[in-house]
Image (cartoon, rainbow, N blue to C red; front, side, top):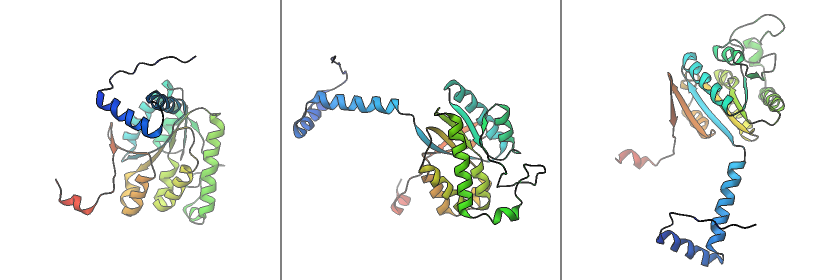
Length: 239
């Protein structure tokens, strides 16, 4: 059953503009308002698929962030997951907080040589991996997380991408694009250490910023959102 909806705050100018557009399109003002409300409701019902970039300088700043994210993800009833090396402070903390580890063994991107059945690849072995093999490995990790989540909204921390960037940020960008083409429902956070980015070409860093929905920088226990826009050179001479 249809019901009347009273919309407050419309001044004469807004009502006049709506009426003008309605006449041009041959529809009523009510249908325009209803269409806007329907679109808003649909957006609220859809699970977001966001791809965020987090830049950090040390493990201490990441530790504080992860503890806060754990609490917020728990309150939102999200599926908490991550991928990355098992010897870093971040992955050790996430495992301790019972986040699901979607990393596939053997781990391709070593920071040190390990022993036992989960021995990581040596640096020489890593250098022989083709781009196809790296993309296949990452796709398997993401698919592993997607299956385990059972369609729950994700809160996922990707620490694997930082290890890929140690060798080549350009290679990491290929993986980022692969994920962008098939985003999972929820929030994906790709974490990069500043040391790996500062040695990269500017064009690759700009592409890294543009490929993500938002860019965040950690400064101790504070989070800053970075806005990057392409500007004309004349802006250099304007106040």
